[in-house]
Length: 239
Image 1 (cartoon, rainbow, N blue to C red):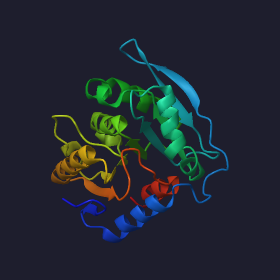
Image 2 (cartoon, rainbow, N blue to C red):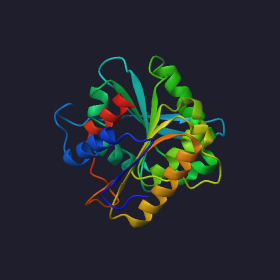
Image 3 (cartoon, helix red, strand yellow):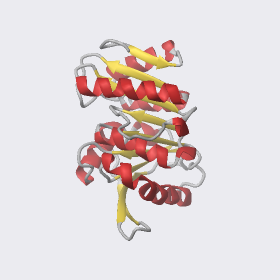
Image 4 (cartoon, one colour):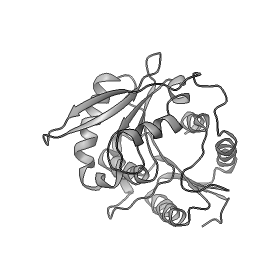
């Protein structure tokens, strides 16, 4: 695997990976693609077949959406942490580019057992409310959400149009082969040693499973990544 500050791409796509890393490091603030002010998500509580419920925070683009970003928060996954994740990475450039954002209030590692129930509920809502965009779903998460995003993706692999983990790792025992062919962009700060190791192991497993995975180790960064929103949208545009 690579040393700190290097980019590992599987299969090789060096020029694209390098350009994305440059964007990620350069764009601590956005370059004006998004609106001037952060968007305020709409909260919706969805009942589940289990009798419990899951809350989602939705940011809608001005026009009919072209795709959907499903986001899983860091930490304990409560409402404030979900809003922090959306505010950091997803509230401006993605809606400006035509993507709806659906943040899921859940504890990422807990999806190891709950992903099927949670994701069937969230996907059903997306199909009903964003029917024209539900064929292009990118799933993303950071830290605990970067663990949860893989559980979520494996619960509905036929609905995965891409995965962005920043950072993330797969902590389950199951096969990653259902994600064969899926584009996956993994990012981790070079100073985040434990997560670097976990990211590298997950990237290797994804590669073996046939996923189209890129792992970028971002120099000078730690656990909470500084990544420009425009860089994330550009990856979605090019995957």
